[in-house]
Every structure is written in structure tokens, then in C-alpha cells.
Length: 496
Image (cartoon, helix red, strand yellow):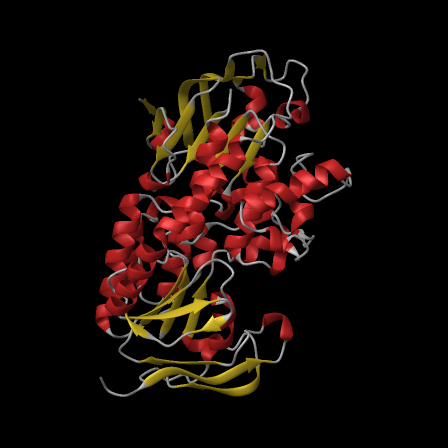
């Protein structure tokens, strides 16, 4: 160890009380350390990062940098921060929900090549493109990238800027298993060069990647002393084992509570929930789905899988009628052929839906309970006040997902994980017959992942509930899964 500290925060308190921790924060990053900032959803991780990067100026305390051997001394020139909400970059300004599926609204949207800009180190650029599989994406519109493809692009762009410190917020979410392995290997090799210091912001308390040397725990808006990685993991595992029996009792009580909820929907009489016949989707020369046949019947619980870019989200957008091409395809929902006279809203009122696209576009800064209530009418925003009995149901589902205390907090002031829990409550609030959950555990901490998985299982054990769920993590799938569909590139299926 050479004693150099790239970032040193001493007794820091932010000027803005809306982004303030409950106690002054102190932490130092040694130049030869690679850090994980770890904590549950809403713990204050992003607030700490904002302090360290200078985004949130200090009222009290000191923030010092030493970026040697970099010639620049500024944080702006040396720190790159890739955050979950930082999705389409400059293309985000006019992005709206469903734009990804509307080809006529994409003329002004930049391509991957446009956003990468001029690259000085061509050799490094080619190596990164090859590793991340970006060559085939260079001329693709940025909003057409899948969640996992987008994450690869973000990280490659950040690495091309050769920062002294690279901060990545939940870097592995949205990536398929092979991409996660490749990314972890890449970051390990980057760490080994000593030229870039890596700081990973993680909600997964039990999965700290091996390139990390030290962990800074954050919880309940407090920053705790830095620990060696091995010491942190041992401490977490001891704590988890101690609390496990209490957690299991709480989850069992939660399952019973969900199972006892009364059914409030009017069921469709058809046993056929989803039927797709010879469905093909293409954008220009790129084939997303090819001649897909798929039938989902009442009560089935499907796991939909496939590598990044295989067409999973496109398939779900067709079912949920977010994709205009759905009306040119042979699709039936609940026994009704798409385009035979039913309105979108007649169909959607029987479906609970959450996806990365919805989360990305949901920029309404309403109280969290109003976001949940918007699920009653499938709107982005709340345009009809809920009746008292509906408001009670909204509060009930917020309690189920552990966010009852957040009901009056503005949505955009919540952490990304808390927002995902609010959108999950929104999906469940109308007691849907069909649940479509696209990466529902994205960005959730260890305990919230267990909680949401238990809720999904309990809900789907109720009569006539049907589930289609996408995840890249096998252990996130609920035990009720009884059917599987795997998409390969070009949307060809493998059904099990």
C-alpha cells in the first residue's frame, strides 16, 4: 500500500437537507483498493455517491481528491458514474413509455455509434466491442436496446473514457448469465491493471464480486466503517443466519396474508389466456421474433428466458399491447383475437405488468400511493382519484411489499429499488388474472428479493392465476413455475 487516497470524505454533511444522511459521513478510498458500497434499498447509497462525486455540495466537512497519476485534478475529469436510472443518456430527454416499440417516433433518436462518439484508442475500442458483443449494435437506435444490451453499452462507453475512478450502480442487473460472467472477468482485469479504481454500488448484500477488496456498508442513512471484503461477507452471513428463522416466520405470515386476499376481478370464461400463432417481428433488417407459436392456458406459470437481445421484452410488449405491431399479428388474449373489437383497456384491466421499460419511463413525481393507484386504471400518472375502498387496497399492497411508510413520499425521491417495489404494488393492486413480470427483482436488495419472491408465489397459488416471468437468475424464479419458454436469437423458441 502506498498511502495514497483517491477520495477522502471527512465528517461530510450536505447543504441540501433533502439529500442528507442522518449523521456526518466519513470514508476514504485507498488508491489500490476496489470498493463496494453495499446496503439495502433506500439505505442512502446513492446519497453517499452524490457526496463523493461532488454532486451534492457540502455544508460541513471536507472532500479531498488525489487522482495521481492522472494529469487532471477535477472530479469531473476523473470520475465516471453509471447509474441504473441513467439509461438512454441524451436520448432520455424526450423518451416516453412505448417509444421503443413505435418505429415512426425514432427518426431523431441517436444510434449506439452516435453516442459512443469519437474514440482515441481504437485497439481498446475493438477489444471492448468484441468482449461486450457490441459490433452488431453500433447502428442500432439506442432506445431499441434491451435492458441488458443497454447496460453493456453504458459500461463500455464509461471504460472508453479511461476514468481514474469508475462508479457502477448495480452493474450486473439485466445481464444474462454469460454476460455477467464476462463482465465480472473484465472488471477483474481492469482492477488488476491498477489504472482504474472500481467502485460498485450494490443492493445485493450477499454477492460481492471477487475484484472488490473492501466494502463500505450503508444502512438507515448512515455510513459505517470500511471493512475488508472477507470480513464483511463473514459478518453478513453470521447476521443472516441469526435472523433467518425470524425472516422465515415473517415470510410465511406474508404468504398467508396474500393467500387470504379476496378475489376482486371478473374472470374471463376462456381457459386460453394467451395464444400467438406464427408471430414474426422485425425492425428493418433485424428479425426479433421468427414464426413463434405459443399458448398459455389458465393457471400455468411460465418462466420466459433467453440471452440479452433474444426478444423477451418485445414478446411481452405484444401481449400487453404496448407494441403497435401486435395488431398485425395473430394474437388472442383470454380467448379474444386482438383487433376483434375489444379495447386495450378491456384487456389490460385483467393484466398486472411491470418491466424495465415501464420503470425507465415512469417519471411522474406523484406520492407513491398515487403511483400504486394508477395501476387500477393502467395509466402512467393518476387521472382519477381512487374511491376510499380502492385507496385501502392500495395501502394494503404497499404494506405487503414493505413500503407502507413511503405512501406519501414523492416517487422520484425514492431509491431505484423502492421505486421498483412501488411499481410491483401497482401491478398487483387490481388482483389481475395474468401477471407479466419482466425482471421484477431488478435492483432489489437480498431481503426484498426474498420478500417479493414469496409474494409472487403466494399470489400465484390462488385460484386461476397465470404468470409469465422473465429473469436471468434461476434462483429468483418462484417455486410455482411449471412451464418454460426459452428464446434464442431471432426469436426462435425452445419450449419445455
